[in-house]
Image (cartoon, rainbow, N blue to C red):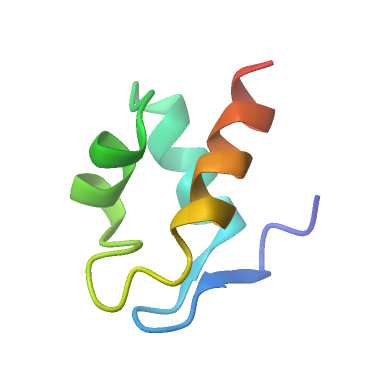
Length: 58
């Protein structure tokens, strides 16, 4: 996994930032969104964020 790959272009949120949020205990899209802002603007990245959360939890 490339931690520098941008998942949410609106806020420039990377895979690494989402991974950090999951490591801090975020387990749902809403929790990750609250910690990182990923998906708060246009929501286009919502599916990517959810998929990454699921991958990180397995």
